[in-house]
Image (cartoon, rainbow, N blue to C red):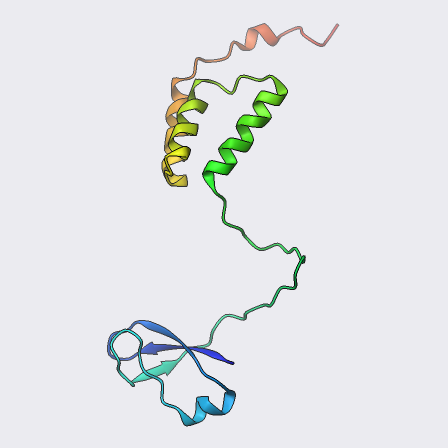
Length: 128
């Protein structure tokens, strides 16, 4: 069953319309799903791809900030590392369902407020 995209000449919005068969595309008239107009222009759609079960590809996937922070927290705990004071605030914001953009801002603020690491304490370590 083909799906075609049309741009409405009246309202300018795009509608995706499912037809039962290729022959019905020729026989049936399409209507804008936003305003009901039949004055439509068919668009060239992006190609779709069917993915078989278990197939992995290079597609982007949606990242859940809450799960990401939970995973990072477990990794810090398992490694015995202190992620810093800012991590707690990021974890709270992620648990509250804040957007990734908001979390980025929280991270920037946390980094500004972190004390500067003393690079002089690293000098001489590891080299003899």
